[in-house]
Length: 472
Image 1 (cartoon, rainbow, N blue to C red):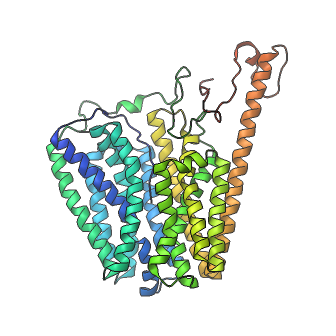
Image 2 (image 1 turned 180 degrees about the vertical axis):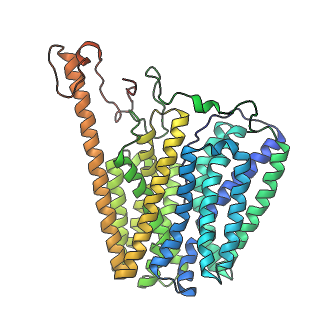
Image 3 (image 1 turned 180 degrees about the horizontal axis):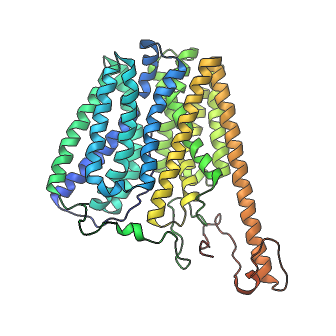
């Protein structure tokens, strides 16, 4: 799965042409993509584990979701701790964790219990490499490095899934080969990384004369006189770090991808909709591949620009896929996963922009890390729910239960967003009325509004955002 975590510490942004820095940046970028690829190595192997180790749907879903547990832990630590300061040490550790996880999963072909710690280490390697590789890439390549990390996550997710499917289908020893290839490639990348660290000893080297980064003393709130930062795809009026509706929509966006690649292929094979592993993986993987393409093209963000629209699109997509599974129609399942992929492409970024709009860099990184941890938690919970329900009431029944829960959560998220928007609109209208008639007291307006406040009309959905009022 892909990660989208903002950087939370200042660092040099000027590109450095030194050969050692180029080697270090290249190894960091390629290693990050390999880490993301490794997260999808197990996806096409889940049906094989269910046959070889006699795993039921619940055990298979827990195995798949173990990745999220490690990733969430690392993201939460990153949101509160200074891991980014030690990127030169953290990134080699992340690569070693990935290699160790591969070796454990190779041994897991014979000893099933080793699959779980192996999967856990895979998640830890992705979480650690995300922040560390981003720090090195931005320090070495400037804003181009920041853009590469954003696109590299999508490249790794999509190509990793395609490569894993191809290896599992066309090469022998499918429960071993994909991990062996990934471990070998990561080991080569680790060697190049160590060479790059030796050739570029000053890049992000810890300062001995300073106990704190400059980012730690940066103001937590953006000054009122500063225009809000453009978020990339949306221009949001103000940050809403405690917006439960936006958090739920972000979790639903990640959950549909996890369900499509982690649960749907096994369900297709179990119900007889197809007896081909390749077909089943391609049908489920269509969600992730469409999401990757739509993100590059910007289609997902242009189609869905509000949180309620995202929620509706995600529910339509997954409900359609479940109906296709019930009918045994692969074309209907593909339609649902494609619609869900478009919703995922815009949904996560729209929700993140809503929560972090206007924040300074330090706060951006911390809030984005917490948001990502929550989104991955939602994805893991939905996958485990699907497995447990499938174990209890059958594959079709489990899919129906998961679809109902998914729709209910989406309805709650949309209701929370609509209520918040109405409350915000009412508060702005009250302030405007108080300014227009200084002698009239309006319920909900500040006592001093009639004397000093200027009318503020929200333009969040008209291409322009007013300045946030966090300091009032």
